[in-house]
Image 1: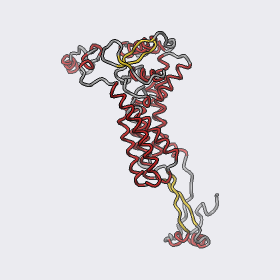
Image 2: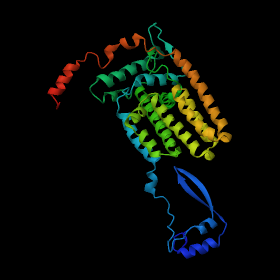
Image 3: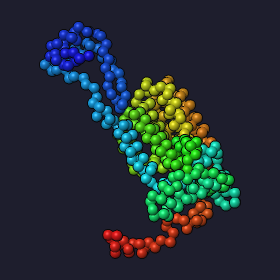
Image 4: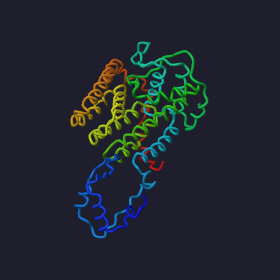
Amino acid sequence: MDTAWTRGAYPAQAVVRFVSSRVDRPRTSARDCGGERVASTTTELELEAAPQVEDAPTPPRQSEPRAAAWLRPDRVFIVLALLVGLCFAFIAQPESGGDERDHFARAYQIAQGHLFTVKNPSGKTGYGAWFPRGLARDLQTLADVAYKNPDRGAFLDHLGDPAPSGPRVWVDLNNSASYGPGSFVPHIVGIEIGRIFGSSTLVRLWLARVLGLLAYVLIIGAAIRRTPWHPWLFAICGLLPAALGQASTVNADSLTIALSFFVTASALRMTAFPESIRRGDLVAAGVAGALLGLGKPPYLALVLLFAVPAWRNRDRLLKPVLTIVGVTAVLGALWASYQGTHTISQDDPKRWLSGTQGYAFHDLATGKQLAHVVSHPWD
């Protein structure tokens, strides 16, 4: 309401008369605390008792400028992460992410409805899964284009390839065999969208990348809004190039990173504002913990952060937090038991001494390389 009072036109004497006419009437104001609107109640007697400044006008109450609203940390993060992440997702060569070929194949296997990998049918060391022959061929073709073809845009020639099909063949998945479905939920959705439209393997890879990036951005954006302390720190960490690079390719780390942000922010929120926690907040925290347990069980340690607010507010939060911890612990233990039987021992020499001809360091003359760098510094 635009009145002389709201514009602050009255001097201090008018303030005193106004306060005197409204003695003992509660007055509620709101203050912003880390993104939360926290109500505080005072009485007009307290206002009257406060020292008055002579002829000090009351500053007008103004709405937040539109530009300032867009500079909120969650919005800045979402815009920058999407811009940079989409550039990464479409410019980076297919299967050029860390073990992306194996992670994409693992997500593809789960999308087919098969959660568990199987031993190498030839009796050799390793775990893998059965795929259409066309997919196995496409995975190898895209890898060759990414790592061997000097034409950086050659992979675009495979954009319109037919959908993968054919008899099933076994494909090695040693680098991703133990990862659970909780790590690949958005990627599975992208792969399924591609399957519905009969798209090529490259399109399905792109869809998996985009859906994984979108999940990463939205989850960390929600975490930034939830945290009562240092939201800009959350935003900066989420924008780190290494994290965005992971989020823009298919792997088990991007969703794990995002869920770790979300669980941490939820625990901080419960600690700062226990009275504002609703059932939806607890359900969201429980789902995040369950996905961590079904993806990378060691990250369940983050769920223990809920112990602090649960103990401080035992009457209200102890039971739901114990339920969250218990369910996520059971899921994590079940998947960890599977991982223990589907992981190659680090001491197995076959893991490290076979197939080295395919690695980048094979047959490299490091001494000659160093001499060339020293003698040709401007090459």
